[in-house]
Length: 450
Picture 1 (spheres, rainbow, N blue to C red):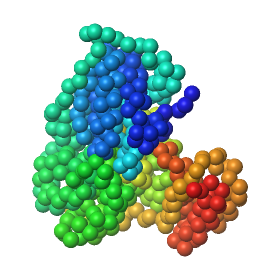
Picture 2: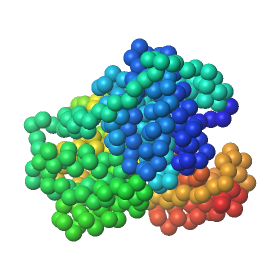
Picture 3: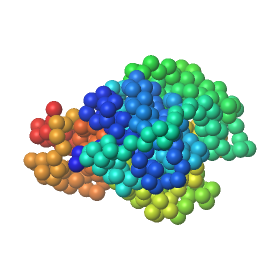
């Protein structure tokens, strides 16, 4: 049986492979059928980011879901965490997000939330895969008045704005702050400027004019150069960059220097620790987190555990260990005291609240965590064999770790959503990390690179 779901839903090149209109229709039918088996309510929320292919996939999913006797609630472009909230708020059976997150516009994807606002379980994903792969879903067809209808929820954005604002201290505002927002020409382009301006900030927005093809195009959380320039040029207090579907945040301080997801996690952890709101004094991170974050946590007497890479795995461990904060270096941060999934806007609100309460600029706050030199290289690969079987790689990794002498790390993994192999080397000196990373990258490129 072919596998539809990766580490973050279904993803691929739109109108090819697993993301044709025909496949989306069958996926919609399977989602509707599985949801009906598990719940009593029969309605599914569909939202999307700003990709041009979103129209096609939205229409196909809607047709498939309605054909199974389930109603569809359409909310249009909205951040992924907004769909999770609306699904839970509307008491829907499930929520579907049409997005490929930080990927380029030609890609798209389908993410699914259960009625409680959490990502769909592995068991339900397997049910959907089996129904589609075996063709069993083709024989289940309600008729007459048993088919579903589609409705547009016009106030969904307003509901989500109120939800986000309620995570900010009610006795404080953002008056006196100048904030630059980079919306990545994606799903936050409407809601983010409204939220921060309604809280009193002077807001400057860049990359908030989506045309269906410019999402994540040299902008957003992966490309902060434009944001840094705008912060310096405008004399802003902070710059905030979201990714295409709005579940990640990367910040820029008042001097234009990028602040990583690890630094954001540390500052938020320390603030929660001070307020005695850091459950079990624990933060969940991943092996991709900087060595300096671990050192800073140790110095602050904050416990931390590593989950496998991917927000799904971080969330799973957070629930198992009773943690309220967890996240990844990429800027995907989860506050379980506020939401069921990572939310770039909520992360941004918590960060600016720390700045307001401390009366210190972000540049000063960020120095509390030392970042170890890190080389992170993404290699395009033609296949994904077991890492251990790549000729010469294990020996080179062992040699690199010996040279780091427990004062750094080597981490090699495949991307769960793209044909990439990621090589990360951290160490006490930049020259050494570059040298060690280069050797590992060369081996991978020679053996499986494109």
